[in-house]
Image (cartoon, rainbow, N blue to C red; front, side):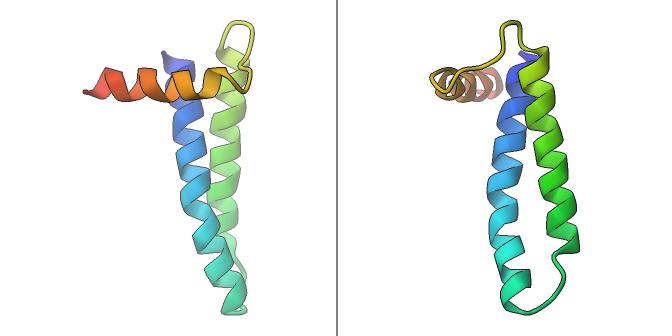
Length: 73
């Protein structure tokens, strides 16, 4: 379950950092905080993939989301 949580958290954080990065670029600012957030998200995704036995396929990602949400509910 730890690898599922890392994968899902990384994907969610990456999704939230994209609008921040686009906003910084359109305002002609350096997207420093967004870049750090993307690096953290990428690290979580890689950690989740590496620690899961056998890795993840694209079909396993929605199941990981469901398992993580079910764990918290």
